[in-house]
Length: 377
Image (cartoon, helix red, strand yellow):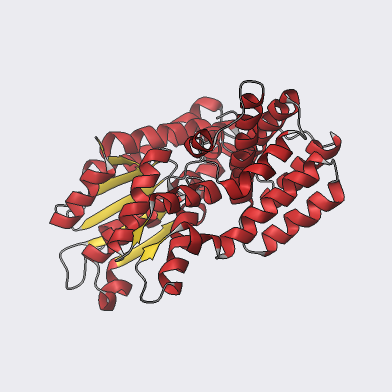
């Protein structure tokens, strides 16, 4: 059964919880938020050592998971068992079966089926005293393809098995419009209001990454003191302005094909505490604005009203227009293609995001980036 995050939150509020959940989808922040709500509803702080188990797929197996789930709660109605990174579960027995040279293929398949039946046996008859929650990450390339083809085949069957017996909650990445609503609601729940211009500024700065947006809002809640409204002026005075200014600098350096300066600016942004994926997203959105201006350049001169409609503030418009002259439409198209390629590589390979960003700059400035092999989305 598939339910929405709204229905899950209603079930948590009412205390009408199911025994098996499967959290899937790309939006990590909302998954963590729902897990916190589940834990707050079921587990009191003093009983956490007895009634709460947090397991990680890369260091656990079915035996440990089922043993934890079958334990009885202490002085409580239910206990909570959470399996994060469930897509990375590498049961030791599974590895032994796959790597065994003494077993013919049909025997391996039988033993793999036996492992799945071990999990299915519990899923068919889960403990009424436990809420068992499997959390799959958004990057399915690992568990679909796996380190070996046999692992991938097995993991797909495992996921389908969980879908058949668990209540699945899909945490899909929110659209930009829904993120705008989320920002307003998040501020309201914390006792603040945020202007529409402030909402747009946050999305311009950080994209639709809820984790980054929540962190930036938390800084505002702490820094505002007794003031209760968050506007563009306050946001521009925070660390976000430094980041946004350096994105302009980085684009200038790329336009000038200055690799050394580009790398220096990139490292400064990373030192400021911004994650590589946030930088990639900010650069992509910045280039989108430039491309939009480029498209309008041959049509008509933008009026202040059209500037506002397109989301451009007067303080940055002239800089954007200047930068739009640095790139041809063909160069911009090529840059977007490579940005997309690096975005996929960040999510589907074991390469470090900082290396991928440095490689991106080498390609954009000199056309000498290393070819990165990725899984398709």
